[in-house]
Amino acid sequence: MESGVTSRDIGLRIKALRQQAGLSQEKLAEMVGVTFQQVQKYENGQTTLNVTKLQLIAQALKVPVADFFTSAPTQGVRLTDEEDRLLQAFRKVKSGELRECILTLVGNVNRRAR
Image (cartoon, rainbow, N blue to C red; front, top):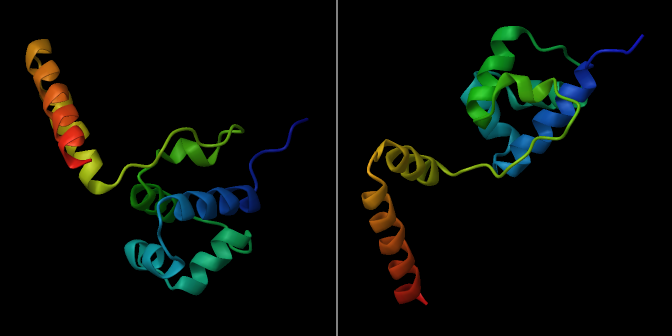
């Protein structure tokens, strides 16, 4: 019989995702409404997270809760708030022609910035 995900496994994922997001334990603690010592205990697997706190941590780290239960490491790059806003706005553009114009504009801006 295969064992499930342990508090230690979840804690290690929280730590890795927090570091990828560039957050300190203090900042994550503030976002979740706990002390930084509590975040340390979560990351070390000393304290079992309840469902509510796990959801708050997932929201703060901008990942789905399911990421804490998969055996594969989290894929992809974490977006900044600014990148996330840009991506959401781009996805709302329905016209393929307008999307191409936006991509051209961004490409031109990048070339000018060099």
